[in-house]
Image 1 (cartoon, rainbow, N blue to C red):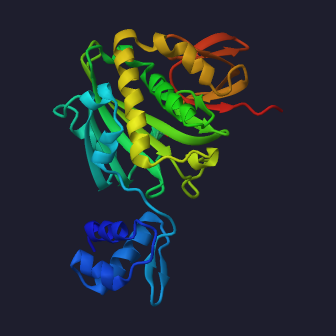
Image 2 (tube, rainbow, N blue to C red; image 1 turned 180 degrees about the horizontal axis):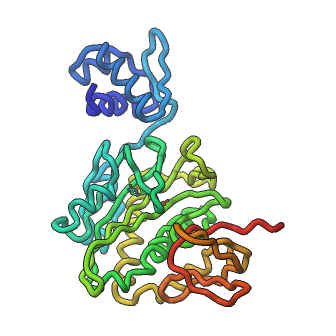
Length: 321
Ligand code: BTN
């Protein structure tokens, strides 16, 4: 069964109403058996349940607003409309993986968004999983004149762009160093930044953003969807709002670096002034009071042995014993 059939069958059901197997088969130009198989495969691959009622046909549990380039462009403001070129994929391994593969030749401002990622990636080798039709997964390629050495605060600046948009939409979000967006203490969105280039410059950066409109099922950690904050926005409009803000933030970051965003980042910061633990990929965890970030985006932590600035690791609240 091809993915094209699975998506075509789901698209035929996107309005959330019942459609008979016969009608779908006619629209797709295939047999009813193929429709049945396509729906069965889509259920297995995407973790969906499609209602099947004898005499009525198939129905999705909820409406899906598919991504659509024209619908995104409709909401883009001037700078973003001039800067970004949009490409959509139905099913892909990972938008970051694909853009990184093309980072030598792809144009500045190329956006790749996917309906589904089979191997969505997060920081520290983790995976990123989403609900079909219930999340945004996209990556953008941005070229900087400056070198990799000057981009250390970029993921925090991207967090500020996301937080601005989500707050405007009515979601009281917080930023968890270095690049998670939290809603009620649960993960709503994550950013994965991958770099290629020289230490002194120029650099090509792939910025991957995953954001839940509806929380996916069990993904091994507490996760939230925007719907929990009562935010109702379509995926195309949300993508455009995020791109509008990212165009402004990335332009500012190119000119002024993270220093221009530091105070704002700290206003959104989760755990500020609280007892935290930073667990590096290797070595002992560092514990202390979270004292914010410096102008490079490094995490500042006051430990018993003095203040430290740290660039990498996993931040968690330190349990109070
Ligand atoms: C994290 O939580 O550690 C970062 C998650 C980033 C997920 C996004 S989804 C779009 C892009 N493609 C990927 O494979 N990952 C990022």
